[in-house]
Image (cartoon, rainbow, N blue to C red; front, side):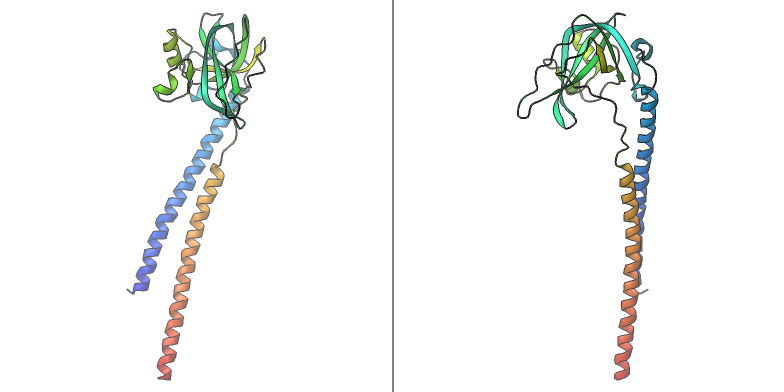
Amino acid sequence: MSRQVKRWIALGVFAAVLATAFVLLGEWQLRRLDERRESNALVVAHRDQPVAPYSDVMTGTIGDDDQWYRVSATGTYEGTQFQVRYRSLDGAYGSEAVAVLTTDRGDTLLVNRGFLPRQPGHPDGVLPAPPDGEVTVTGYVRRDERGDENATTPHENQIRLIDSEALGAAMGVDVVNGYVQLIESDPPETDALAPLGEPDLDEGPHLSYALQWFSFTLIGVVGLVVLIRADIRDRKKEKARAAAEATIS
């Protein structure tokens, strides 16, 4: 077996390994796309359901598949608020205001009232007070955010992640699992807080990434064929040149 043939075999093995890896990466991105589409379909199905009392929906531990139902609750806000730092909305940076609602059923329910923009170069602002007296809120059901204890444990009423269990432990009360992301309030909320809006139903870059990985596979295969053909052509030219030189001699 000539050195050139050995070289082709080595290149073929290398190309096969790369092609396999690229195809697997492309298939992984397609699976991620399917998961995103299923998640979006679940969000739409839950979002389009009629508004239900929170007590009919938030009956246990809220998981990914329990989110985005619309629920309502009536009660009064307590004095405690938590400022969720390092948040962003539509390109602006700031914080979110999580208030504690004591419902007319006697439950303690967390309500994310909205986003407080931060002025560039300034620290987070002071959270505005929630509406006084009895309020009725409507919002999306959200699960607890996952993270380490330092992010979920309040320090001077500031947190980085919303975790109902951690906040309940800090206040010394039982809290309904998860929280409600406010859509509307009666009486209305202050204009200082921007609503967080509906869930993002974008499919993400998974399809384009998959196409890129499959394109890399095709480029690699075509490149290998072109390289081998070029080697064969050069080898034929070399043999023809050698034959011509031998004839002249």
